[in-house]
Length: 186
Length: 191
Length: 194
Image (cartoon, rainbow over all chains, first blue to last red; front, side, top):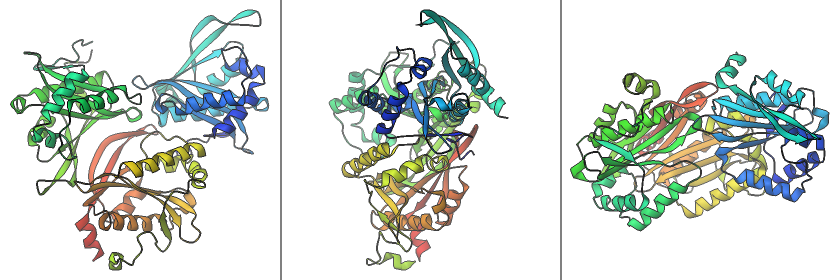
């Protein structure tokens, strides 16, 4: 039995106090490239208080519908991002994954891929879900590559889903199945 | 795909109407044997009002969906009992099941066994569970036989769990696995 | 062992450990670390393990206090080192059915380095005495997952007997496991003391 479920090669998943989450999110949110890679909503600065309220709502929501972690680098223990499973449909065993590496110095170095590996292992061997879905913007090739490395396959394209910087962009839907993940792990 | 999922040969499973079910449960509970076959806590009398409030709270519970059904006879639509999946553990794909038939004149007619068959079909082909568990008291041989007929196997006894009528009684655990159920029901349901 | 039954022999003080109440100010930080240890969590709980922040642990403790006050069928203790009162783990008597004299027990030592020193075994002995001679239960039950042979051994040594095996009740690490219920009766425990 795996006894380091929340630990990968580069990162570990943690639960943090609302104040810490709020401050960190606020800091990351000031980097507009981060928010545009992450989110459909218009990039917006969020005060610590507002972020705290949102976190409180998420944390107190019915746990079984979503589960949310912060990500720390194993070296030095700094907070570098977050990852979570959302919209869990228990009777079909399906959930969405959302991930964000907030600190630029950790982009392109494998931290996102490692985080995704850890959360997939959690999803498939602790929550025993059957599939994981995600959406990624076409202007985020680094993420797309990372997800493919983690085993995701493209399942569809939401054409002209986003409107940013004066043009339309597609959102790419990707998914991974439990048995595919188990095969890859062998 | 089978479309009369909730219909058996003697009974069918229907939605719970809080007022109707509360009145029935309150009435059935006046026969202490009903209670003592069903529950380990001391037999007591519950008003329809209190029962209704409890039911509505359960139905509203956001943490887990409400899987309780009314049991009604096909013959004349009368409400004879209730059956439900109590506490579905999604990450392990398993749940406990509980059933009770209200009036003594409806016991021993096969209603319980039929209702359980329907519920298991629902559990294994609609909720896609991997196993279903139940507990039953050793002084309820009729129920034990009925559950065995439905495919449950005894998995153990919690010794001297109950203290009733000056005597101690075991609580028996039973369980049925998905592949066991599929083997028994090869011909009928799978689409 | 029979001096366990003396009124003067303390219920809450052992040789290595003490049973104590929750320190709401300092314990949350420590228990938060335990909840990040998937080995600890998977051994003790069947729900998918979820790490908790100190704030979330504090909330959990508040819920326990509320339950202790209101429900009357829960007895929750922290396990602390006798030497320096350091938090080692927890022990809980729950689902107590007074009219039937039945209850459930759960206990665990949080930090890997604190296991294997006899803290858990002593806590178990003290909890058994508390359950059978202070709360006067007739029987005590424990659930243990099949993949936790260490716990199976500890409870078997203490006199618990396997009563139920819920086949394939747990799905973990890509495999299905049985959930074992073990139990001990008051008369069995008394006989072992003699």
